Length: 455
Picture 1 (tube, rainbow, N blue to C red):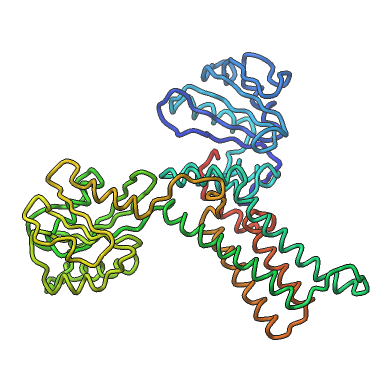
Picture 2 (cartoon, one colour; picture 1 turned 120 degrees about the vertical axis):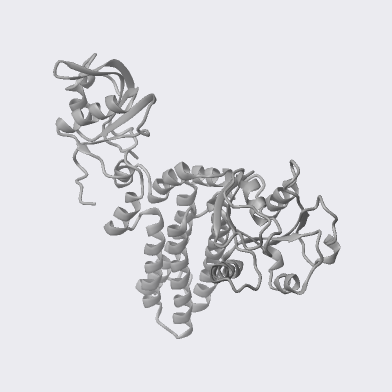
């Protein structure tokens, strides 16, 4: 992103289309004066900050739209620059005409995420808060929303900064011992003392990573595979969960030959569901490929819904599949419970077993309840939401952990403490990349390019 950060930018901040209003955001040193040139109603340059003014946007003598204009003066704005927001009528044409007029008057069109990038570079927010804005916009369930809001309020920053402060204290103690060995009142930083302190940090970092990964699982959607033999009702269950006819349902075995996907949110959970080809021995080339994909999903899925027709006896193929399922991530779904129940729960050595039917209203309630129970989060308090927000942040934390493991190896090999101190500073920089206290321009550009224009 080669844009300058000292010019004035603009973009449509609302979804373009027919609606009540649309907002055009302007930010930069000339924001107020440039908008004032095309605004009729009052002199915006003489008005107080954080005020709203009624008037018209004019292109020479032509009125383009009736508007409300908000002016917010630096530094108490999102970007810490002068910001103007023009509230237009929500039609496509008026909004585009006003935007074009701003561009004709020397204001540059903002790049994706540039308003948020300016907020970060001007010290208004850190990198975790910038990412929290996009995470909040894209949140699909309550867990995602709560964690994003918490991070936006600074919980992730606090978590990393507190960890970095502890690391700084250790580095400072090492360097004081090296530079001022004559000071008797300073505790000697021996290898044994250093190991004890670093072990505490390592356990803390491991806990942060583990909790964050678990939250990511629920926040981003649980990879769910619906598997089973042909014609046991997998596609019907998928369609009922999604409340749409996404999979073809027939009585012919082998109808589903590829992976059929969908997404559903229930309570605080989002499931990314994949309906798979029925697992069976087959000579059909296309169906065989689908079956192989289904078997692969057994390894990749976080949640497996193994569907069985409970009106039919268990056979050797069922037993073989059941023996390969992991109990902790499997729900056995005894479908077609409206018929004679030949298979009983007591016959199967699994912790999560439910009866279902797709022919009765509420026939999948037992399945939904069991899924929620398996991944239940409960009410999240402040400590629960002090987490790393996304894969980038978790990846950097894992890199810091690897660097910490290298420090332990160096200590075992008798490396001098002054060199250990350098390694610890590298860990400090890695963790600083999470919050943006240290960053690379190229990575920063890539991150903000994923934002929408106007954010």
